[in-house]
Length: 145
Image 1 (cartoon, one colour):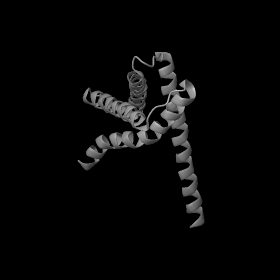
Image 2 (cartoon, helix red, strand yellow):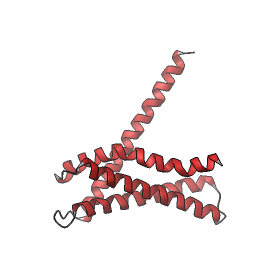
Image 3 (cartoon, one colour):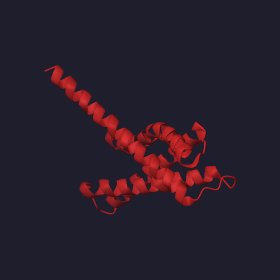
Image 4 (cartoon, helix red, strand yellow):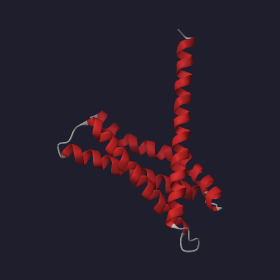
């Protein structure tokens, strides 16, 4: 029972934590690509909403497929990841367009480019942090043998 609850809750906790660096990267990329200054609070709200929507829809896809009788984990995880990534991108772009409002008309193509740029830099940053942790763990385990 506890494993099921953790399985459901962990993507949402990850989404909230993922949004802290995402908001900073969004501020930087919007300023760099469009000369658009976004407050950190607004950037964080866009990032949180997009991440929570992505986590919810990815979980919904998994539950829908499992309840429909499809239980191959090798396929469920990539399908849920693709749905989560696509829904994150759309929700992030819509959040940028809503924040821009009618006064700062940025085209949808530019908002999508900013969102894709944020995801790319965030992915590389988190990948680098993950590789750094692995290297530290390997060095520590070799040192204590």
